[in-house]
Image (cartoon, rainbow, N blue to C red; front, side):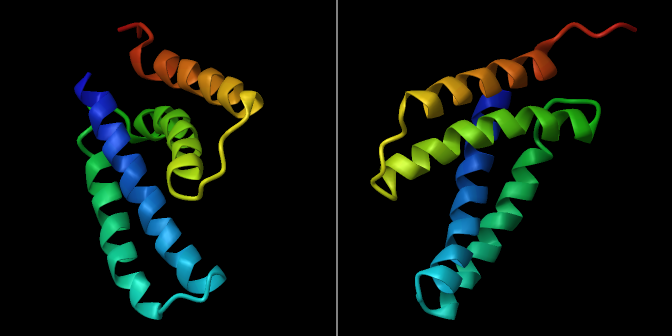
Length: 108
């Protein structure tokens, strides 16, 4: 459960950090948006190190599914565009894949 909380927090930090750059470069916002964006991206990287996984690559791979689902949440909550059923189905498949990667039994 703790891994999921770290992943969720990392996703919010990463998406928020990337959106800060998007706002600056695509929405015409002030370049000052980059400063909290950089801080958010640093927080994202730190949070991923808290995942209980022996290998970084496995932690990062499993995070991918959480990122996809969180991005669709951002789409809806921040950008006001409701994900459709195909978005939801795709996110569910990705979360299932992330769970298999993170929690699957490993041989010794």
